Amino acid sequence: MKNLLELEPIQKFIASVGKDVERFFGKDDGCIVYLRPDGAFYGIGLYEWLKRKKKNLTLATMEDDGQGLEEQKVKGRKVLLVDNDIITGKGYKRSTEAIRIRKDRLGIQEVKFAVFSDRVGLANFSVAEYSSTPVWGFRGVDALDLKIIKYLSQDGRASFADIGKGIKLSSVAVKNRVDKLMRGGILSVMGELNINRFYAISACLLIEATPKAVQTLIEKLGKKPEVYHVARRSGRHNLVVSILGQDIEGIEDFVDKEVRLAPGVSRVEVVVGELPAVPKTFIP
Image (cartoon, rainbow, N blue to C red; front, side, top):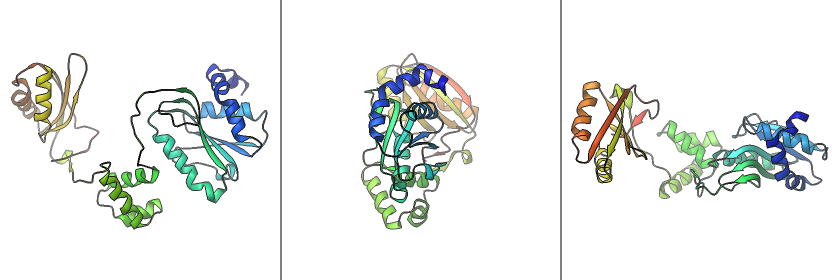
């Protein structure tokens, strides 16, 4: 462990957050819980540095959903979760929620989060912070909402009672959460078709066109059932379109009629391949 503490990133981490973490634990029993796999480097390094000064400290690990946690190691203690970085905040929310739901049962005193790089400003202790806009916003969405959404994404016909059993909520509580998510425009429940029952191949269209033509194509192609992805891009090919087809002839026919002959389109490259690995379904 001596070599670990000599590594520059660990030294920078400890120099930035070590004193604050030490004050957080104070004289209370503490536990450092690093999130697998990325948090191990900094969690173990911080633990090895801190235990030289603080004897009543334990080290534990878990997945960001709480799986694999040795609960005895956090019982009655202050808990510091440690990870490598926070990019979208998803792992932060899942892990803090996993500890929170155990807090009363295990007598956990307090929970805080330490990370090397925090891109969304959620951590209590961090070395580097970024002002970039978060990819995922959590306003109005908590870990239980995410679990409900996951159930519905796997089976849109799942009953509120069945979902409630899986996440330990009543069917009424699940319904209220779903209604709130739908009113807020966060969640939609809709019927989709399995792609492999209707199509055999896919193609990616790399399109070079004028800005006006790009906008026109987006509006037109977005209504076509064969199209499952449309996105603007920087560079020469300023529009990417992904389509589905029955065969090569069908792909070529679609490209010729819907794209090549459109005003303002100067170049189209077509890459044909298998059906997409993601998504598996499409809206008719």
